[in-house]
Image (cartoon, rainbow, N blue to C red; front, top):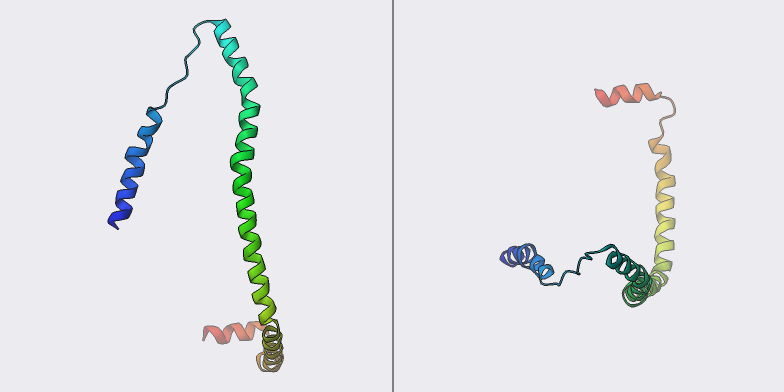
Length: 120
């Protein structure tokens, strides 16, 4: 419990301090500087987005895809091992249900009569 409290305090107090250590971009003072700053941001954005997509997002997706493929393969192998038992158990359950149906059906009574019996 103490470990979790420590991690919570660390995450809420100290981690935001790292963002203050970054250098803020210079604010343009004239319209021409603002124009060049805006154009440079617009021209750099597509390459930065593409770089983030290729290096980070695709890496995560490929890793998750590989892990899910391994998981599905092992689950499929386990299912193939248990397939005869599953079919056997399914047939047994099917027969039990067929045997229980005549006992549970009370065709002579109406739904209202059965509801009144439940309330009594």
